[in-house]
Each structure stands twice: as structure tokens, then as C-alpha cells.
Length: 253
Image (cartoon, rainbow, N blue to C red; front, side, top):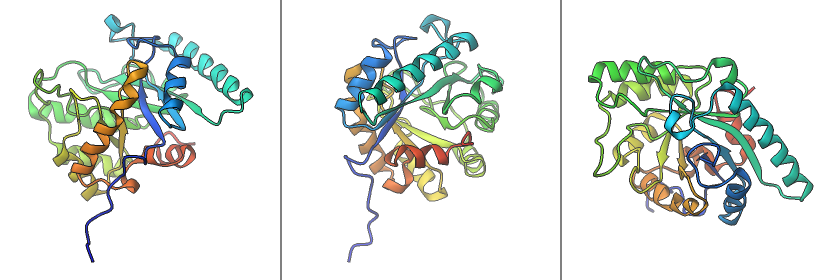
């Protein structure tokens, strides 16, 4: 009998944990993205617009993200009134600053369901400095998922140089989830890093990084990437029902 692992399947994802909307650099509104996520067969999605440091993308400050939270509450009420089971979660793609601190204060992050953190600047810091920066960011008690961790763009930007083993050792201790960004120019984490996560027991999320309602279709590339790293369904938090997924996160009350 084969002892090969049963890898995460192409129909296993229940939610998408990184979705941008027209509140920042996405094309479509929250409602339009919800419609597309439902059409893609998902049960939930997390709205993760950029934060204020990314001013060119209209990044959200504390005031704006709280307004967005109210809009999400209203949208969830409408879905329930229509008898739809779909759930919209409040999130952020919170920028990691040069020193590893985060772009929104802890009291705001504490109000969100899912906090993603990501690198959008200082890609070429020396290895030791980049490693310390990342470790500080993922050690924040409110940070749940490290989005597109190496920040590579295929054929455009090399991966950031940091000690992935050291970062994953911290992730094991803090419960940090590592993302497999399914967008074809990212596919980040790379397969060998996914394998490291699986071996250490670090959970992963497979997300579309959608900026347009057509982008949910890229999730299959992320699943393919996760399979290359031998990830199983039990390794992937958004292959789980929403309550189980949320209970896994650091912020879970």
C-alpha cells in the first residue's frame, strides 16, 4: 500500500484569506467580490486592503479601516437577510515597517478577525537585519498570517533574503500561519519552503491575493504549489470551516 501523503485537493478550499477591494487598489467593491467568491464555490473571504504606508494604493488608516469594518457588518447582515450562509471577515494586509513594527496600532489590529502582514519595502536589507525584521513582525500577538512571505515576483524581483528556518521556528511557537500566494507572478511560498512548514507543523493558507473578481480562479495555482510542497488538507487553514479556521488564529478570543 502506498504511504504517499494525501495532498490538499483542488476542491478543498472553503475560504480565501487575502482579497483586496476598491477601498484600496482592488477593482471591485466588497459586494462584487463577495458575489464572485460565492460563484467560485467559497464559504467565506477576508477583506484585506492595504494600510496607510502604501499611500499610492490608497492604504487605510485607523479611521478608514474602522469605517470599512462597519461596511462589512452591514454586508454580512444583508447576506443573512438573503438567506446566504457566506461570511465576510474583517482583515488587513498590514505593512511591515523597516524595523519590523506594523503599520496599524495594536488596538485596531485587535478588532480585526484576520491580520495579514507583508513586506512592501526594503526588500534588500542584509540577511540578519531582514530576519530580525520578519521575526519581530510575526511575533506581534495580533499578526495571524504572513502574506507572500519572500515578496518575490517571478522574473521581476528576487526573494527577500532571510533565514526561513529561523522564521519558521518562531512561527511554530507563536502559531503564525504562512501564506501560499496563488497569484501566478508570486507563487510564494516556494515549494521547498512549504515542505519546511509541513515538516515543522506550521500551518499554511492558500490565497488568491485577488484584486479583481476574476482572480478567484487563480486559487488552483496556489493549490498546485502547496501540493508540490506536500501540503495536506489538515495543513491548510482555509480548507477548514470558518469557525475552525478562526479558532486557529492568534487573535481568536
